View 1 (cartoon, rainbow, N blue to C red):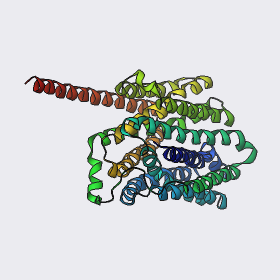
View 2 (cartoon, one colour):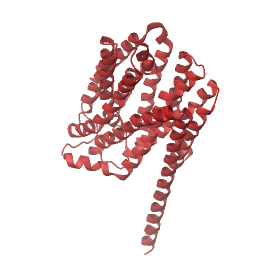
View 3 (cartoon, rainbow, N blue to C red):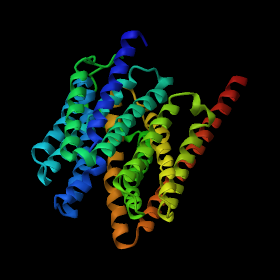
View 4 (cartoon, helix red, strand yellow):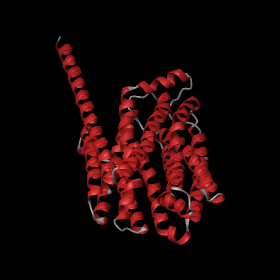
Length: 402
């Protein structure tokens, strides 16, 4: 990578930080604000769900369009604009309509995340893809962390509209910075791939497997650290500040683990062990959180999903993309992100239904069960992969002896 490419790669990371700050600075207090202005719980659920549903619908089409056009800069510019514009909607219409439209725009913005990742990863060779994925996810988590810190410290003093103004400003800064990016990917890229050929990539077995595993990881994260874990802290007597600090611990952990994933730290264990143990610990987290009566212990347990976001998600993303040709990577990434967006949408709905009809503990047991299932599937996959590789090596040795 030459100096010009290093500058471009660094610029993308700065745009990423602004983008995710704009997308998440208001998140910790969105539900609290909407209920405070007398919006019903059912309508609040629809407003929050609009973010996930719009992503679910748009991510694969955006990936296909990005592959057909190869102009990732355009999608990054539009994504940053939509991220800021979403909060402008909330400022102009500080009610259910403004937040519903804002969440649709935010979901549309998140659908362009494909181009951020593909463009950044294209600056790195094949052997450095895990490191590249970890770095951009670290920037992603850093933007969220800055957003959580800002809203935790300032929400009670300045209110939701000023928090949304911070979101608007960050989106506009990212929008301006994005104009300095290169128009296309720096690697060789061909446009002569048909729509039918692009769609075929969704049948790739590794892509499907790791997309499903990411669905579980992201679904559990959205149901716990972004939702019910905060409710548990509140039921234990935690204030808004304590709830914010719990989220900050999680995001800080995610940033640190994503940073470690971009170093030689990963060499301590095989990918099989990292993925299997990460799901195992995430399941244990889901078992322990509803059992404890200590706010401090819940906050300490927030380190575990940070591992899931920082290391596990990085490995799942890079593994899903490993066997995908360059000219089909945006479509594959769109499929990957659409699948895990499905998890982000349906897991909170299922968990909420279990919580309403049974209990919070039963909801967390369901989430723990999906983690243990994902751990088992991962283990079986890697064992079969090792067996196939061993058979191939044995045949090669026999052929060489002949």
